[in-house]
Amino acid sequence: MLVDSHAHLEMEEFDGDREAVIRRAQESGVDCIVTVGVNLEDSRKAVALAERYDTIYASVGVHPHDVKGIDETTYDLLRELSGSGKVVAYGEIGLDFFRNLSPKDLQIRRFGEQLELAAELGLPVIIHDREAHRETVEMLKGRKGERGGVIHCFSGDYDMAARCLDMGFYISMPGTITYRKSEMLGDVVRKIPLDRLLVETDCPFLSPEPKRGKRNEPAYVAYIARRIAQIKDLSFEEVERMTSQNARDVFGIKAETL
Ligand SMILES: [Zn+2]
Ligand SMILES: [Zn+2]
Image (cartoon, rainbow, N blue to C red; front, side, top):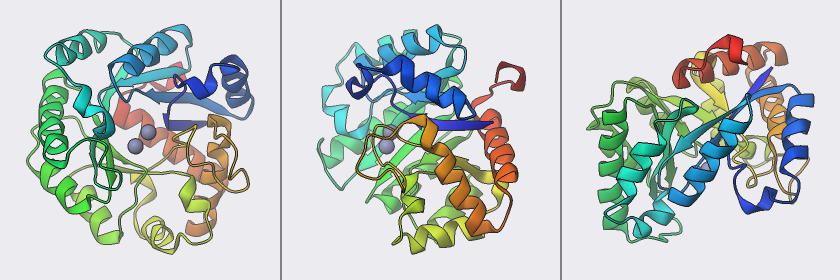
């Protein structure tokens, strides 16, 4: 069994065939999917999906792209949503200095506020970091949350990974690890212990080889686990077992529900 630790099944890209996508995931041995909100509206949809399917869990929060839409009611509504028993994390939150769809200073302020909210709610965090490695590490150093978290779609070097591991975070690998030019990520995967790695699709984005150019979906998370097994010279089953265990540990998902 595999866990897709980061999907966006609530997005409109899946409106036409969501049921079939979820069935294909189950048929491919993906027993658990964490579907991740990027704003209030999508967080609502993520929780509704999680409440409908045993194998789906939800995360709620506001993505750095969307933080300009936060108003005085947003955090209260997210707090309310997190009361669902299927919400296992807060996020995705963080910094995206690649696209800068929200102003930098606002991204930093909202990231700090949401780290505090996650700590208050007692939830682990799912962190998005694009072209903001230094600032992300700085922000995480100051956080007070007792539950750990995941650096999703990891794109830093080994030095950054080591800092995140030191702070107790897990590192999640997306489809980019299957791309031929991913030497730096390969180096990270080779060096960090398997008991700190997660796998994710980030679907509908970032399809792994050999599905590049098509819409991504949870069933394809196996390609990522297979590539990690190759890089670390381990069996697929070992990577499958450990990454699932890690996801269960960080999100507090019991094995019998998988
Ligand atoms: Zn992200
Ligand atoms: Zn995402």
